[in-house]
Length: 203
Image (cartoon, rainbow, N blue to C red; front, top):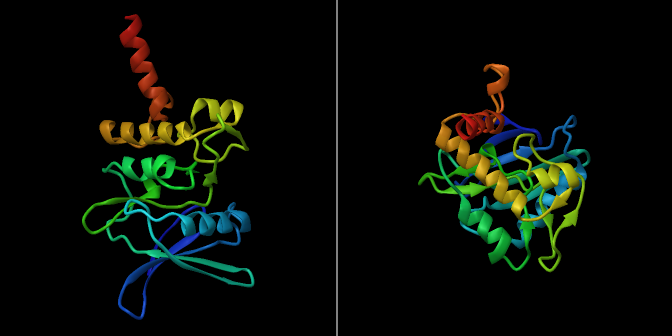
């Protein structure tokens, strides 16, 4: 059964021989995420395990076909819950420090008990916490990018914290980060809130 489709490709629901439900992500030929991102996701998830991170059960590579097999979370993606513990673990608790780079509501899934788990590590970066930052190409979803990362390509764990803040604003405001059905000045959540802040401060 097809569950949906994202930048990586389609996601299907399946069942293992032992009865466990799984989610299978298939890399689309037209996907902007290629072999490097596929391998990055496998490498990242193979070294970190946490109750607030989606479990990767395995992968499959056959010619041009690439599949990732995850635990299935029946409550789909986050639009109403917080997931700070998973981020804190990646930034401080894990022996290998990880910056996710694409934290957003649709990349946080909810299990049967509504526990949030961070997913989609295709853009994740490992980093040395002894350095002040790393310089890398800008990647992620527009509207969730920290200013210093978007403008100067300076990447630290604070970029994930910024994205977490945007998701928190989505939850508090009850609206998505971007909504093309609204008027121009209201399409992007941060710009819309900035207008309110400006009016409150100067009027």
